[in-house]
Image (tube, rainbow, N blue to C red; front, side, top):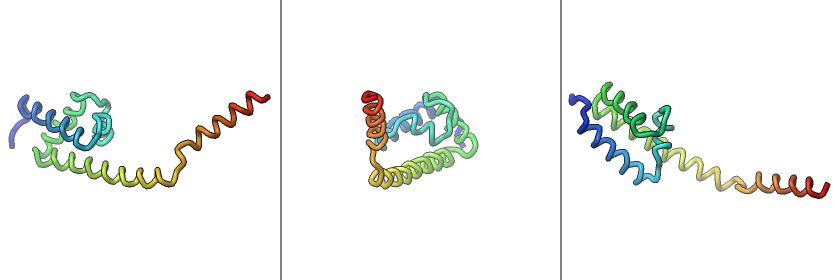
Length: 104
């Protein structure tokens, strides 16, 4: 198994950036998927480095596939929820309260 090196880190950084762009995701989305403390690339790479050290490229790829799967599942769920919900419901209530306060 290869050891983590600067070259591997650079390649993974480029891969992650392209992968995020292809899925219209941000580093913050990846941060959530990795349960990282920060969305900055060094913090994300530190977690990916741990995955790599535990099982090589195979474990790292499996983790990224798991995150991608979560994104697709959450996207389908949130799309279904958005159809049923009124996005302006809270705004309407706030406007009514403001009108009532102005009339008093």
